[in-house]
Length: 105
Image 1 (cartoon, helix red, strand yellow):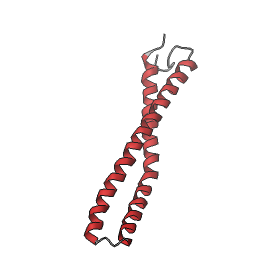
Image 2: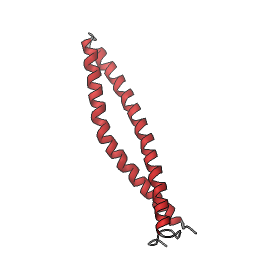
Image 3: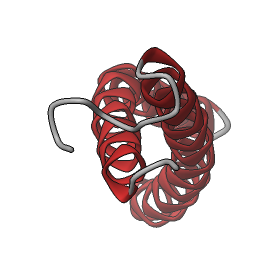
C-alpha cells in the first residue's frame, strides 16, 4: 500500500517547481511587457496623439498587457506544477517498490 507521505512529497515537489517556473517566466515576461508598452506608446505618439492621451492610453494598454501576461503565466505554471507532482509521485512510488518514500515511513 502506498503511504500518504509519497503524495505529500509529490505535491511539495510540484509546488517547488511551480514557484521556480513562475520566477523564471517572470524574469522573461517583465522585460517583454516593458518593451511592448514602450513600443506602443511610441507608435501612438507618431500618429499625433497629445501627451495627455498618450498617458491615458498607455495606462490602459499597460494594464491590459500585464493582465494577459499574468493569466498566461498562471495557466502555464499550474500545468508545470501538475506535471511535476504526478511525475514525482510515480517516481517516489516506483523507486520504493510501492511502499512510499522510504525516509518518511
